[in-house]
Amino acid sequence: MAHNLADLFEHAADAYGEDRLAVVEGERRLTYSDLDAEANRWAAALAGLGVGAGDHVGVHLRNGVDCMALFLGVLKLRAVPISVNYRYVGSELRYLYDYSDTCVTVFHREFGPVVADAVRDLDSVRHTIVVEDGSSATDLPEGALVARDVLDSASPERVAVERSADDLFLVFTGGTTGQPKGVMWRQEDLWRSLGGGADYYTGEQVPDEFHQSRSGLGGEPMRYLVLLPLIHTSGLMPSFTGLFAGGTCHYLPHFRADDVLEEIESEKIQVAIVAGDAMVRPMLDRMRATGAETSSMFMVSSGAALFSPSLKAELLELRPDLMIMDAFGSSESGFGGLGTVTKANVDDGSLFAEHGPRIPKGTSLELVDDFDELLDDDSTEVGWIVKTGYLPSGYYKDPAKSAETFREIAGRWRVFTGDRGRYDGPDTVIMLGRASQVINSGGEKIFAEEVEAALKAVDGVEDAVVLGVPDERFGHCVAAVLQWSERHEGDLAAVGSALRESLAGFKVPVAYWVVPEIERQPSSKTDYSWARRVVADTPPTHDRRAARA
Image (cartoon, rainbow, N blue to C red; front, side):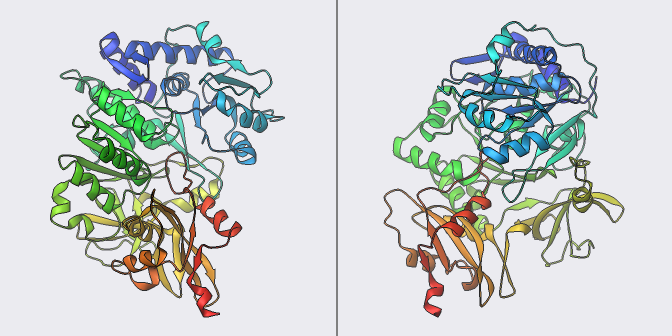
């Protein structure tokens, strides 16, 4: 057997069978045997449509049992699942289908009209399959098959396929600052990096491929509520990790804070997997308003988006017994680090020591300067964060970009994560933000994420996106697209005053665009492309530069 994601799930299915729930979505509750059979039906149905090893299948679905079963079914065939951002429309969706060489796409009915438009005259997409979701959309691609019809006639038995640790898995970048790119991972490397196949701190490999499926036999299953989208690795890989070890994964197709709290309460959820502020803020507001019983939950694990120190402190004031785990990484680097925050970090002030997540350096994270020279552990210089260990081989169909991002330094293969950071002693890296979002204002380098975290700590600010805008005097200045909290009157002068208590003056935004709601990617990552369109298409709510005229 191979270190392959489908094999690892089948080990768990063999270990837990009918005795344990694997996935839950509303009234749908599938045991490990049930989920294995449903994934086998997907594999058989896709094989009947001519899908085989190396073929690419689009997964255009919201979270739920169907999405998880489809991913597993595609992997069982040695085919490659293509995660489709369900907010894409028009040319961007057509681009993804075309660039990724998708031959079959499976979509929820609500997305039928945009899928029909994207695949029209796109010969590479040979088949489309619609999964019912209760919506009433009727504009579907011509000849679309109905998922339940093809599944009900498909075999629930496992397909006879000899899989490999080298089988390809494509992880797609979010496309928040440009066109999405496919990052090529060997399945074993992805498992080692993000699926529990190695210790997250030391990189030490688990002893064998049955280790995870054995590990859950001795106790009750862990109950996870996976709120991050399965079409993003920050939602999919925690699901795989939980399933490989016999856990139960709960899903909600739509994120609504009231539904989340009801699920935590009724199902006694132990671990909630969230996307930082974007999900925790509304959850916290509803916890305060309703007094929901969340005592079963002992951990909140966040990834893919900023989880600001101020909001962590608020959550820990309400639930001082919680542990908060902050996972850092990217499509290109896989797991980058894991930070832990408890109430003790609030009480001793270490949570607010500096803007920017603090993560253990471990054995795989290092900093290099602009000339690719490794920085010493005691350096105070801001450098580029690079990672060694289990890494992808490059970008799909883009050797030039691959050579730029993945290269050898000091005799080791490394990935440039695109993040800037600095050492805080020999064992810790402070992540300062994405280099692509650094604002150069009169020679001063300003990290957008630092200012965003400070803005979200200001009373009355619900959400914010920070970006640079052209400026005749300084080249660029800091600007913010801002969303007020409910029932807040909005006082931008007070926001500026509050920011000056924690930020240097040149980091305080000079212009603000106030919007009813900040738009984000399905993973809750910041959508800078959307923010730039807001700035380009609408006048600012307030601009201090007007006083210069």
